[in-house]
Every structure is written in structure tokens, then in C-alpha cells.
Length: 555
Image 1 (cartoon, rainbow, N blue to C red):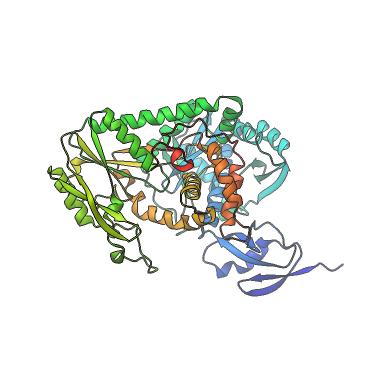
Image 2: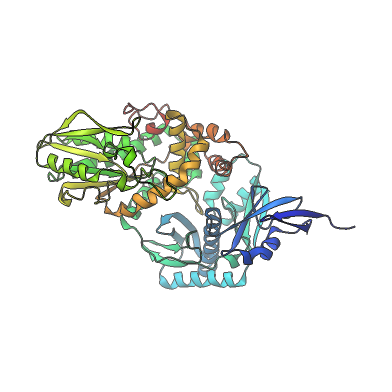
């Protein structure tokens, strides 16, 4: 009997392939037309792994490591390769846990537990084993098994985090990946084999190590390792706080929610944040030369609520805070510079009247009375409405804006008068010991919920603009974060369990034919790991209230 053949369209070209031909076989035929490795494929606009087979007429679009989805699959693959290499190099009987934590520079930070000592010699053996498996080009297998069987396997393997995670999964089947005999679970698609994972480098760092990997902009180059030490310490302290409560992963959070007291978790988390805000206020009050508190952070970090709570604590310390928004110093819209696409660029420093801003700050520093402008976003013009300020001995300005950590914004003000604060929602939870939650996912969920509630913006539109938002952060915020005097982590261990109920309905509202559906599907799958809780016990001054509503600082 003759094998069926199907029409497959690739880059406008139609060719016939036998039923059962893998997309990997087809990708190899087209690889020389692409600068970077093909690692995934869209089949009729649905993302697939290359091991899948042709079963019908279809249209293909290959995904390379030079694209975000391809780079994510590559990083997932390197993580899997690394975990397997640790067990091989140190001996399975000696490894109790390999734990992925968070991003450090361009890589992931890992720690090891067990009957072993992490030093350069062991790290070299791990890296050598990884490179050996790359040379061997081992297939990365995949099989679907019943969830109950997966739980048994993870119990047998000593992967307690995964065992706990799948106790709360509603799906009946789980996909396991394998390299030779070694099996693991990963959240997201994988490259076809270890031969694709050529570019990485391991570095000892702090109590663990970092696997440094290429970014999508240059997928064949491992960048130099330049860790941001202040940011790392904040992440480490936040993770240790979760560990002390016994909440390292989503499985732990679910366990706490279902068998513990969620209200206690909420109260402890809120108390910890208030304690940290109070410490920052005391630090500022102890340095009377500081007259300008400058606050910056990426989108949906909770800057507004943080500024209000900090102001309350500054008052507790005898200071009189005055808020100033840098946005009020925007140039008139007709003068706003344009970006490379010819659109107004409101996020660049040049969109702000820096000269006038500095004149006003200098005058305030000199004890003069200054009229602060108001930017009318409807007319696109700066206006003056009699908002006068004058700084006395105990007065202090609390200034919030995306450029606040960049000294070019306050170029005429001596450094000794500035106190800089970087705030971000730095997610300390991971799905399990081998699957991390990107910090940007937590912020995106926050923003979607807030935008839908306060601006009538759909989840689809928020997802559509997110790349542009992140590009602005990369250019204007992240390069200056290590300039901060202090960093504040606004993420709360319990927040995903609360955001779930708000985010799921608006994500389900995204049509399957939309470009944004793939991201919505990924976020929905991620939220499916989380057991939800209500918002009734969340304090009115919580940073989370800025997004879900009901806060005491809302105008």
C-alpha cells in the first residue's frame, strides 16, 4: 500500500512529503537558508516540537535560536543538559537536589545539595560532561504518562518538588523528557537533541554557580559574565525568606494554601514588606543631607503604592515628604522626539525637560519657593496651576520616574543629596526545582489585571505592547539599577494565588486566531499549576491592591 503524501508549504514553496516525515527531517533540508539553528516550528500557526510528524497538508514556519521562543527552548535544553551532567559527574547517589533559582546576568543561578563539595574541579567535570553529551548529539526523548505514574516516578527519583507539584495538577497526563535513562519534567518545549546545545559556560558564583548562555540577539556567542551583585543579594534574601517559611516552589505554596492558613501567609508577607520599607525610611532619615528620594523600577513593580507607604514611614521618622512625578516635566507633545519608526518616544530621557527639572530642584535645594508644573495628558501640554513647594529642614522630595536612577536626569544635583531606590517584583518562587518563573511573568500578570480594571485595556492589547514596554526598560532602567542605594522587592509569595482568579478570565477572552493567543495559552498553563485564594484578607495598603483594586492609596 502506497504511503500517503501531503502538501507542505515552507517560505511560499510547496513540496510533497510522506506521512510520518518528522519536521526535524524537513528542517535539516532548509537549515542552510537560516543563519541560526532551527529548533521549533509553527505548523499552521500552532507551535510544535521538531520531533512531531506530518499528518496532513500544512504550512510551516521555522523558529530559530535567534527568536525569543527559540532562545527559551535553547535555555531549557541547556538546563536539562546541566542537570543530567551534575548527576553523571557527581554520582546519582551523592546528589540530593539540583535547584535552579533565578536569572543572573545572561544565565541561570543553580545550587547543589548532597554529599558533594562544589568547587572549580567539580564544576569543570560538570561542564566537561555537558560538552561530551553535546558531541554525542543524544536524542532528547519525550513521552506522555499518566499523572499518577509521574508522581510515582518523581517520588522514586527523589524529586520531591515535582512530586508535590503534580498532586495539584488537574490534567490526567504529563510529558516527561529524557536524555538516555535520565527523565525530568519541563514547562515548555524542548530542542530535539543535545547536539543543538553548543554554547554555554559555567561560572562559580556565591554559594552556587551560573550557567551563562547566549541571548537571542547573538545566539552563537556566550557573553562575558558580569553579575549585578546588589540585585543578586536582593533575590537571594527574598528566596531565603520563602525558604524559611517552607515555600520554595508552587507545590509548596499550594500545600500551604490547602493545608495551612493562607491568612497567616498574607499577614507575614505584608509585615515583612512593611518592615523593609520602615528600614529604608530610617536609613534616609539618618542622613539629613538627603533631600531627594529618587524611585525607579520596571512596569508593574508597585512604585505608586511603595512611594505612598515610604512617605508614611518617612513621616514616622519626623520627615515631611512631598511627591513629585517626573512625568509633569514632559516636553509639550509637539516637541517630543521620535523613535526609529517615526512615533513619539515618550520613554526616552530627551522627552523630559531635564534643564527645567534641574533648575527647579536646585532652587528647592537652595530653599526657594518653586511652582511645580502639571502635565495635561489630554492637551499634551505642560501647565502651571499654583502648586508651590518650598523645602524646610525636615522636608524631602519623593520623586518617581523611569529615569530616576540615571544621573543624567538630575545632572545638576550633587550626589550627596540624592537617595536612589530601585523597586521591582522579583519573583522568588519557581514552579519546581528545575523550572523557574521569569520575573517578567509576574509583572505581566499584574499589568494585565490592572489595565483591564483601570484602563479598559484587554489582555490581548497588554500582551501586544509588552515587548515595547520591556524594550524601554532595557534601555532606560536596567542599565542603572546597580546605581541604587537600596533595592526593594515588591513581589509577594502569595500573589500568584490571588492574581489567578483575576487573570484567567481575561486570558480566556483572547481569540485563538490572535497573534497573542500563544502567550495567553502559556500563561494559562502556568496558572493551572496554582491553587487560587481569595483577596478578602489582603490589607488595603498592600502593593497587590494597586493591581486588583480596593487599595487605600487609589485616587
